[in-house]
Length: 129
Image 1 (cartoon, rainbow, N blue to C red):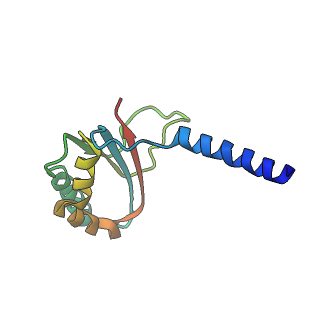
Image 2 (spheres, rainbow, N blue to C red):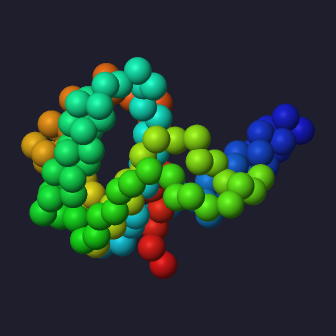
């Protein structure tokens, strides 16, 4: 009986905990999609130019509200700053649906063909509040 009570108590706690922390998916939730690229150091000038042109074209996907791209800023060195990446993009969307459309858009899919040029990519998506 004690085992059953313990099991039910743990199950109730975990159920209540997960219910409390489940994210409610809101299709109209504004968001920012931030991507950091670490490029292969051996890229030629032409390959780097191709990558930058692809970044410019990527910003033309119709569901994007705002789009920014560039290399790390020349800010002062501080322990909290990571400027080890080569380029970053910041893409603002009016909704999760707009971001999904962007992911599936032919321009984005064409951009992904640039993948051999990078060693590492990290993506951060955040809600806008």
